[in-house]
Length: 316
Image (tube, rainbow, N blue to C red):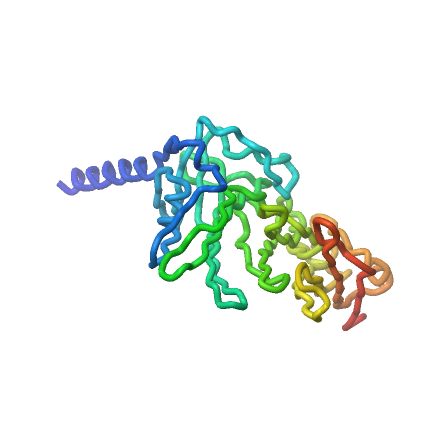
């Protein structure tokens, strides 16, 4: 009796596991990519419901909070979108094998007139029959939908199914909102990737609405470095509000790190040194450093202006 009962439990668990992982994308119309789509709904704001409205595929809820919509558009014409990893070139979206769309962020903000907005960020990855996100050097493709509140009604003001791909393993980092001008908002993304056992290098990206669409308008290299014993650093940013610019204000990037020449023996791979500390690293064994860079908007993107300023402390 006990043996029979255990076999039944095992049989049911196998069936449940198979059903949980039997993921098939739902075929949808090419209108899914129409950036002029309209969407209105009343409170409460339910981002999962919105995701299903914008991407009406089949909703799956797997273990470890792995919830996504699986869809495929057989009549869509895939277009290239930037993948900042650059390893496999641009991403062609929608993916011909199907798309898994996940919620990435629900961002609230208000302008100076107390108008309320929400931005829903999505992560697209290639459909996987097991519901996984794979691809060591493939970024998660970012999508954005912006909503404004009118009384008790939320209205979609802009919709861009795909912007660009960031991060690793098809997982886009969470965008963070930043005000770069008077009632002008953008999003920063901290992108980190690297080879197995080697340095993990990070970039800071700024995505903003410009020329009628969301796009990358700033790329800051050497923003992070981890997985190295002899040297590491991390960055932070600050928008300069000195009254000289109403929009696209200057941004100061500050990098703080440490260097220890004695720890080089522990490094499996050699890490690149920032130019600003290379001379100090030749003559000193240990030190902390801070590098400040200033970026200013020029034409269509932010560019570094002037020379970086480096400061050193705890020098040995």
